[in-house]
Length: 88
Image 1 (cartoon, rainbow, N blue to C red):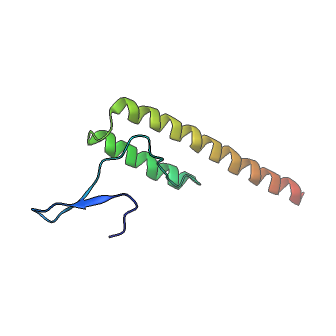
Image 2 (cartoon, rainbow, N blue to C red; image 1 turned 180 degrees about the vertical axis):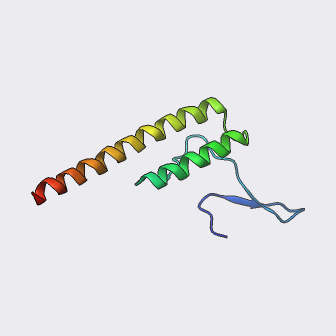
């Protein structure tokens, strides 16, 4: 199993468990296209639903992800329009 976050192995059950996220460390997520945004939104939803993060924080993160998604969408449309205009 490949994981980019630190884990620990439970000494009793042998299960692999994620260590809690350390506040102040940089979180990295690929946010290059709308599929990446969708994946990250789903992760935030699951973490909020599982009470890993507070729902208020999850709402703020989702709002920020929506803003990034809109920028990606507009940028993509802009490049497509430029490509169409250059063909004419």
